[in-house]
Length: 592
Image (cartoon, rainbow, N blue to C red; front, top):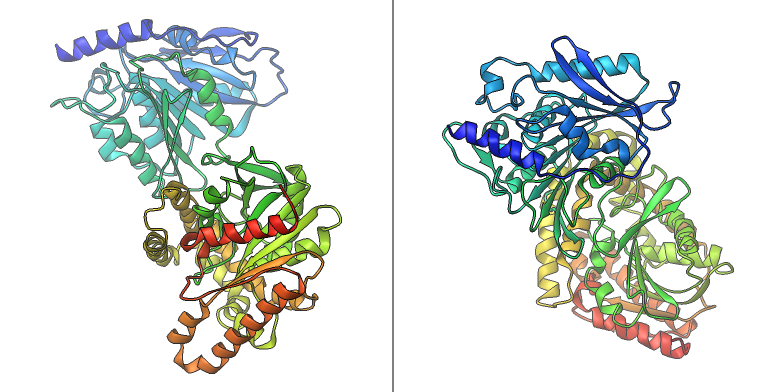
């Protein structure tokens, strides 16, 4: 009796779900018989037989029909890129994988039926290889999850509307490959409840448990991006493993329906499919195209006039070098300045490349600033990013008005310092890079990277304290990108190229044409204390660093700011020191 009531509720909900409102011209629609089963087929408007199309299968809810689903989703009204099929279930509902419903008891092989539908369409039309997608509403959404669990190699991505996940499938799901999947759920759904449902025959896990399960199966990065859209009426929970995305869209006032006042489901599903290869970015972030690569840029304080402050990250002791280090500094500076943090290739959300180096980044940086139409800048470079900053000036100061620089613990091109920088581990990476790249691809260093990230997070907490401007979500989202195999390999390539970067850097004269200030911490002391066998060399390095930093600041009419008992990550520990140093430079140059 409870199952019969469930069917009636699902059928009523489908009728109330609303029709699509896509405005595109409709193509040919026909009912296709396939043995004792059938599906509706929609060709896109302006269909060309010689053109390749994507294929989308859309599954109706319990008690519904393929025609109902066609009218409800109306995908052909939104896009002419897809051939859309609306299959008809073999009985009142689909065999969703719970081993608990009518279709299961009747032995209906819906997975096999879907295989036949895809094969039938592929034999008659030109389908783009690897561009097959599945969508389901309500109980058809539960079945779509069954496809995700058992046909992951046949579909590029899945979208599920108004269905969390059956408890049985949640336990048994083992996709052959990671899957990209989108869940859309109304938080007030009382048919297939958002928070799950417990029953001896049929149970549901919550929507959050469902998407987390797929994220776990995908081996996604541990921290999910949390965002809102449409005036906070839609909450997004987004997981990624660097390639596949698992995302939950929770509609605050939504019930058991396809279309919502604040969310055009059909349009958003097609957007999800279109942007599978584009990472969902944190607030204030965007990707900037440079040649064939995209680089991650974060802009804050956009309203402020005057030259932009550009933050360039350098490495800590683990050679982790990305904009996570500016998760506090950038909000602090954005109170007064227009501030960019820009991640090198292989860092943050930037693309990866095989030929990465600090010298290359000088050219990439110039291209990014040109794309952003930023013509006047003040550069703040941390640690080894001083190499990029110096080459950026050397090669691009005529095209971009570089007003001043602030160097934070820069690499110094003196004999003893170079011997430290170019020794271990840089020399080891250079000698072993060819064998290391496939070793990293096996995941052999992932666990040790996780351990390092945990230590770094604890250290950052100690440095930051309770500063309310610290953006911990951004810190965690950027930091965890270091776990990606592609980023581990980029880091190895960059370290291997470091020695050549330093040699080229040492050949350049000291920069005197613009004001250059230097913040000089005593971070070297920690290495001296930890390496008693190399005390003499490390002390010479420290002395040479102090001397060179003072000379650079004096000859470039900047400030030399020595910080004692200070951490190398000054951007997290003492952002106000950096802000004060920038204020001094802006005042000296009478910049707004």
